[in-house]
Length: 375
Ligand SMILES: Cc1cc2nc3c(=O)[nH]c(=O)nc-3n(C[C@H](O)[C@H](O)[C@H](O)COP(=O)(O)OP(=O)(O)OC[C@H]3O[C@@H](n4cnc5c(N)ncnc54)[C@H](O)[C@@H]3O)c2cc1C
Image (tube, rainbow, N blue to C red; front, side, top):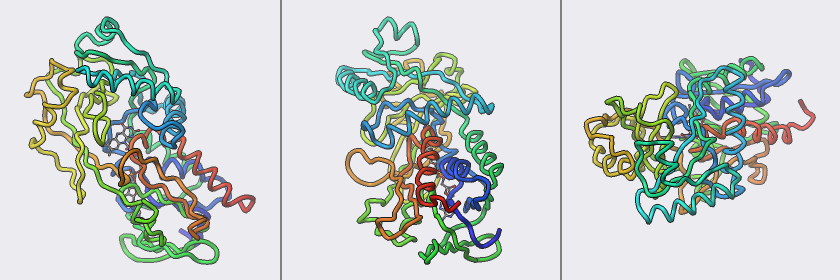
């Protein structure tokens, strides 16, 4: 590593890797720094692997825009580059009249966002999914699933092919504004050193508020403070995966989209994520939440699921922005906070995996505006 970079990206999750693949090119010195031993070990490998269609998010929000754009970009790049995916579609199902009224509103929001959706009659629902029970449902044909490990690994390969240097076990521990950019202090396995970078991009996921703070931002005032929200998954055994052909979601409640049916690309079935806020990182899952799973709305729609089919499996932790109501992704060049060349990505929770290629394009535009004709 030389000690001057044009662009430094903090965090090799799916977002940092996608951004690196997009901003690295001939003539640019790009570093991607990751504190863990490998890429994508936090949110990016501990999620539902769903390619979302864009139903849930406020119109014209970054979440809605990057999700819709990311959805079509992802299918294209998976197909071209041999990344495993399935465009299986999903059904959102209401199990009672109260949910049915909410379902209609959700359908309207999705349509308003430009998502292709189809309201189903009971007959159509049972033709598509004979084992599903519900009083109302709609179908989202552009929802799918992707191998998230293969996706992040693809972005990294592309970043390296474009000349980016990737350093693992390299934690950013300090950021100082200097005349020609930022002095970044890092700690690797053997030492503590610093270098200068012109542009600094914060893709630090669960720690992105801390990194913003390191750069001198008051994260309370900026509303960048994160809440960690743990999502637990239970596997569903007993061959029950053969009884469904699509992802099945409930009508969303409280902080989440609701415990739903997830499949991976090998069609292994899970239920989750069951979400709750935590203060520390622990991915441990035991059977203490089994009751919550059994009482979830989705289980009412799946009468064939027996309690003995469910086993605690994995979990992931989401980087949620604090505050009431809808919070959008923060993707922002912080020049007006006296930090020219510093780009923050904070609160990149769901649908960040889906949005990753679109977010990378968006950040690349910001970088081009910053570097202008310099590179
Ligand atoms: C339970 C759950 C379910 C989800 N389901 C879906 C879904 O179905 N579909 C979807 O589209 N999205 C989903 N998401 C969201 C998606 O996983 C995230 O939006 C996405 O993975 C965020 O990627 P990231 O790169 O920003 O964060 P991360 O993957 O967390 O990566 C950030 C990286 O930064 C590194 N880092 C942090 N601080 C430093 C530092 N100081 N120095 C160096 N490195 C540092 C970390 O080690 C980490 O590797 C889900 C998320 C969770 C947790």
